[in-house]
Length: 178
Image 1 (cartoon, rainbow, N blue to C red):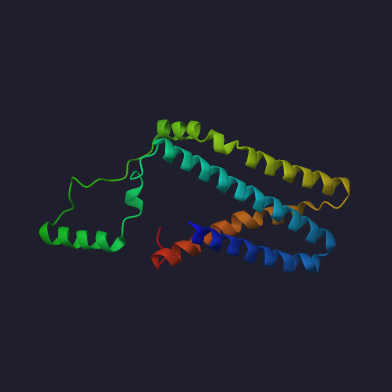
Image 2 (tube, helix red, strand yellow):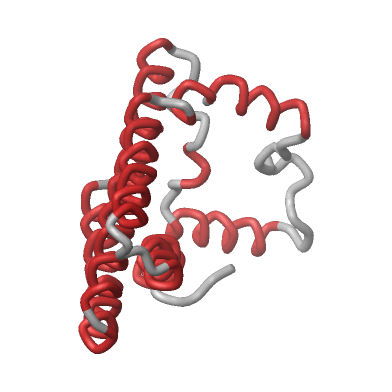
């Protein structure tokens, strides 16, 4: 988990360096707006990760989530391919008794939402959104606000997260897989 977090942080910083280079060409207001928005977005992201991490850890400690519930996501690919080869040699068709991951319906989604509302409205996330709001107010009050630059600064984290997830998935599996 820590290795993945470091890779995402490096992706965020690489995106910020690109925005920083463009901001230096655009002028001081662009630089101020993009970096203020990037810092706020980064704080919000880390607050979200931390609050959800705490929620999962507390649910694991309370026994609300069995430790082996998500085990099928982390099975070794080599073991699976060996099992498939053995099954293919003994039978022409797939086993009917294979367990498939359960589908999540509306009821389960709503139940999950009701269980995770504490992390969605955690003090950390609310405080970081407050910092974003205050940053926006200060920039407007000082007549230094540039909406386009601010939105570009806010979009660095989501875009780098998207591209980072694609590249991390490629690194993990060795190929692009859907």
